[in-house]
Image (tube, rainbow, N blue to C red; front, side, top):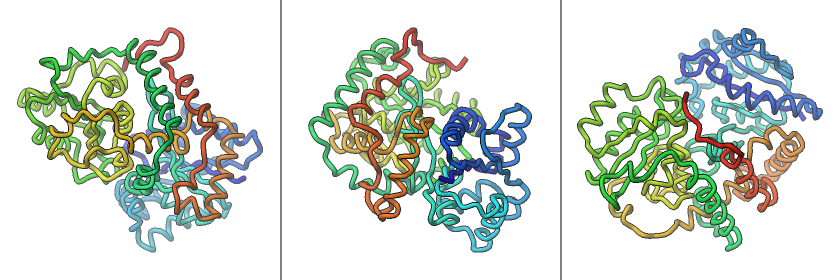
Amino acid sequence: MKIIFAIDPWIYRDLVGDQLYTLENIFIPSIKALSEYGHDVKLLIGEDLADVLLLKNISIPCKLHVISLKSLYNIYNNHYEAHKLQYKEKSTALQKEKLKKIIFQELDCWYPDVIISFTTPVSVWKELYQKSLSLQFENGIFSRSPYPYLCQLDPFGFLGKSYPYVFSKELKNTAITKKQKDRIFKLKKIYKEEIFDKYNPVNKKELIDYPGQKIVLVPLSYNGVVINDLASKYKSQLDFLLEVIYKTPKDVIILFTKHSLQITGGIPSETELYLLRKFPNLRYDKKFDHYAFCSQWLTPLVDGIITINSTIAYHGAFWDKKVFTLGNCEVNVVATSSNINSIDKYLNQNKKYNSKSYNVIYHLLTRYCFPIKYFFDPIWLTKRFEKMIDSKKAGTLDTSFTGMPLIDDEDCIFDLLVSESPAMKNNYTPRTRT
């Protein structure tokens, strides 16, 4: 099988080698395993990442292909414009032809069976290689400690083109059985008793002013990339946060957290301090900076999640919280509401859980997101590719959510969701930023 791992060739977010972590820790182990299994594997990257590999003396266990930055600027003005046009499938015929030419030349007309795309909208590869299985690599529902690291390979893309968004109605309305629902209940019980009750560094009493006060969590992302900016009407994370502040009742605590990539392009510290002074119900604790992935620890403690496209929305649905999604992307599939105009009404509802969200979460955990260890298993990954290729040939992969094959035996999947959690290991302590 011919397989190519394609990492976006632009200098992403203006930072040379920005995508090195994914290449070194996720793609290279998978490339090595697939190559040793007998597949013809190639890696396509940009010249900035190639330079970093050389400087750090990192070897690649397959044929390396490099796209020059100059050739990209001969097609698009910048990476933001490129990704925007590619995502919306609005590149001109000339731009498409130029891109096709440089990629075909670099690969010497080698035609892949499978393409794994990171950051570049997968629609690019679907158009260039229509017979290939093109997949968008991303983190899954859970991906950060204390949860297990899950990843996903989406045949449609991200945001409003993603698999959960495309099949939103079907996923919500396909009821799971009692046995399947019990698997979710059991997993939640284990996570609560064995992880969050034992290790949560945050105490709910520290977050509220009086017993019974409602809390919402707003996990912020970062600015300047299409995967965030095209998810909503907002031009920045500040715009988003301000709307939340203005529309949320003053007696409801608003906690906000920062994305690990929000170091640049986020809300400036002066603005952050101003907002905290001006709005008494807006809260940010220094502890949020100390602990890595603090949103994961906060979610079980709050009453609602307000987000554009954070996977914390899935966590909120898993923990039976009200979920408000203010964008157009995959997480809308578990939304309580797509706006916060009546947020107080929803926060005061006593409904135990959203059965439709459970339908979605179960499907995604058993057919869409898989433990990272499977991405390094060439036998499992080969079978996964073969099943998806068969579904593509049969026409079901693009037209029906039933075209997505099971990841594994369902009991095995839920066992792994426990055993692969870092918090289930001996001597676990919550990860810090330092």
